Length: 381
Image 1 (spheres, rainbow, N blue to C red):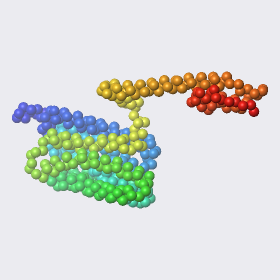
Image 2 (image 1 turned 90 degrees about the vertical axis):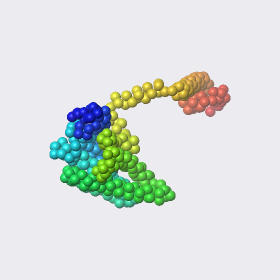
Image 3 (image 1 turned 135 degrees about the vertical axis):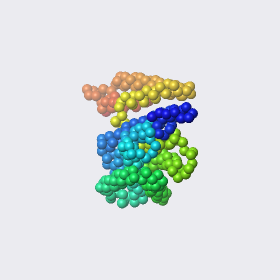
């Protein structure tokens, strides 16, 4: 829906944004939705094809987190884009709004509480390794089921509380941001304390591996907080104060940053977890690998003069090494011919010395010391 404001600027949707902001917002949401579906789809495929990935219980939590991200990327983001394009002014009774509101809160709750539980799992892996080791897969499956049930209840409750704006903001901020953040920060403070205490002890391979996984989870959580904070801050300011400093373009861009958390996780997995990185490489089409190679080749051709000079120097060194290798091979053949001419026959049988002289090891020795050919002395047995 398009309209004109008093200044003659064409506005779109109930948000009342200008055409450029609307187009940029739609483009961002479309790209984020596509990246979320493709990236998390790769996570599912890697998990199903790689037994090594399935052997890690932490990866079950990661795949469950990817399910929440796919739900947001395939349903919540497209519906938000649609509602932004029509007359959307907050709470209404349209089916599209109810589906969006439920899916948005449902997927967000699942994502943030999955991250909180993964932090708790990392806490036990580092601080209480024995307890973590003896826990079985059933514990993880029960925890995942509880997380999804809580997420469904949270999504349904949000439909009722959204009528009461301030109550909804308080509930949303506490359950979807405040409490999980307390759990995450507490777990990582204990992990940091344990790491400092154990740094003076002989390092163990298992401890270092668990610490590396914990650092990967910390990166995910840091990105999550960075992407979420701006949108929640402007939401609290808008609902709790009369400040008119929050513009609708700001809401659109911060919401895009908010949605971006659904597609950054697979990138972190590929960069930090070797098993996922190897699986992604095997699944990527060869055409994509060829395009990457062509781009890198083009970049090397378009490199600055200094880079070309270094490349030429490297090429010259390589050619010189090849020439030296050819000379060594020629010397090897020459020495082998000289050895073949030596009087090594004794009576009617070949001397054992002859077979040893003409062996590869001896020829190699002679090739390394050409002058030694004239000094070879064969005595009669």
